[in-house]
Length: 86
Image (cartoon, rainbow, N blue to C red; front, side, top):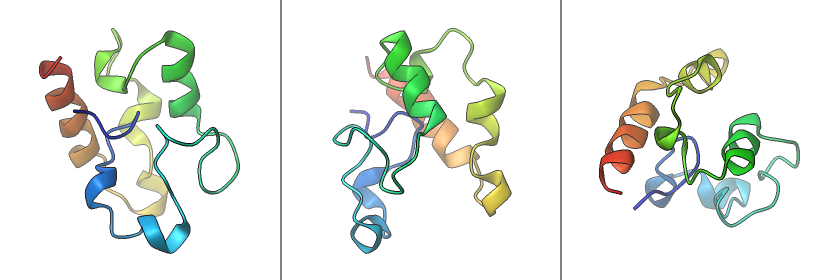
């Protein structure tokens, strides 16, 4: 079962309560109040998560969070696993 659009494992996120995040599947806007381009893209395409996309991983998904020091590999791996679970 998928937990987010981009592959973040929301159920095990230790920052979820700290920032007041309910997960992008349960919020119209991300916890920071701006637009998440990955969330918007999935929703426009009618996808549950990026792993269902024909062009996965696109550059936006593959590099998301790198500028803040996050490794995208765990997210991408989650999307791949979620796509196989369908």
